[in-house]
Length: 356
Image (tube, rainbow, N blue to C red; front, top):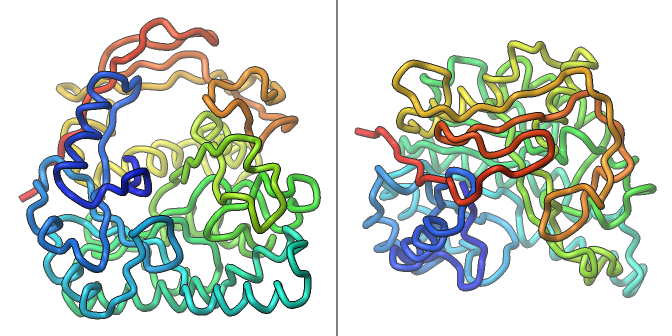
């Protein structure tokens, strides 16, 4: 389920439809697309087809293009009138900008990457997430908060069954796998928004995923080219590729006792299908589409940039050792990948939703 911060931003139903047309010709995986939001596109949001559009993405913090929603009236209209789940990026822009200015005064253009967690701070995340929760409660709206990165935000959520929740949350692969100590070795390669924070935050996120405070895992996949990621902090784009190793990261958590093997399908598939009301997918059931990954749990290997399938040609996990390896992938009943080779491509189908 792809995000709207592309060029041009996906702010109209016409642009959303164009992305579907492109995917229908090129996609190797099943796909859906979020509708973007701005201070001015409420009529486009109201016209969404809820059986096709996975959700509305609201950037309640710094973003690219025209996707930042910082007008109070606009936010109220979106939360009041959206016909589909609202997914929010929660960081407080004024707090971030003020912190950036402080570090510029201190370091000029040579801001250290370790400062990223202070610039995009836990306070900025918590303030924005609290605001999103308040809006969701005010309008009795379905809210999903993306890429939770702090222990403090976890108090906003509950462990009740996901079918009963109006407010849910996810944790992304970078925040599960890395912590602020890794800036020393990975540098700007792991610069992302929200920022990767402390080891204690990382442990809290892992525990919240296991207990159900956080409902599932996502990737926040952002495959910037290596030339850009090699720039100094101020000129380095935020985000990293993570889809290819996402399941491997979750299985490492099983290996280390942070999750049970039985937890894996819940946090990678079942809960996502339930939350978004995905039609006929997300479970191995008679009558459902066969979307299946086969894994060898005992095939230890080291990630090498040269072996990745990313178009950007690099991985933040380069040089890292994993205990498991994906052997085969079946998409909508079609065997598309086996033992490192693609058997078929362009077999992805548009995801549909069963919503009342």
